[in-house]
Amino acid sequence: MNPQQQLEQRGKFRITVFEEEYFQGKSCEFTFECQNILDRDFRKIRSIKVENGPWVGYEYPEFQGQQFILEKGDYPCYQTWSGNSSYRTEHMLSFRPIKCANHSDSKITLYECEDFMGRKFEMCDDYPSLQAMGWCSKEVPSIKVNSGSWVGYQFPGYRGYQYIFERERRQGEYRCYNEYGTQAHTNQIQSMRRIQQ
Image (cartoon, rainbow, N blue to C red; front, top):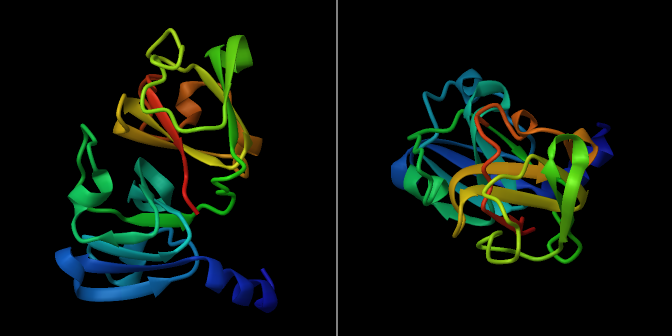
């Protein structure tokens, strides 16, 4: 990335991370991804302020483990970013911006089988329950992101494990559930929403 692109990027994405809860302890501001906060002499991240852009945080270094969507706002403790997750982690060790989020122009296609086979359903709106909108299963074996960025949740009501789906990653193609993320142990997705810019 050249210096001009870096300057333009800084205005779009800005996150400040803190080593302790409620914005205490050591802090550092980022405008680009961080593959390992431990390299910055942090022990962990326990609170976050997102000033610009959506971000995705990861439980482990190198963008591994449980994913957490971070949209503009304050996250004073881990419960605020893990939300209603059935799996809670008290820290985050890596994070990156989500560059292709466009809430007003987002489209995703869900498929009944792996490799984009079987019945399909296109969505361009948020659904707190996929089954209520007509999806006949608790599982989504493959997904194609046509535009924008989405977050899928393991359970209805935007609860459980979070999976980030982006047009700009993997060309938007997720052929089977183990491509959803390193923590994906099932293809169970029961609610989805567009990521806010």
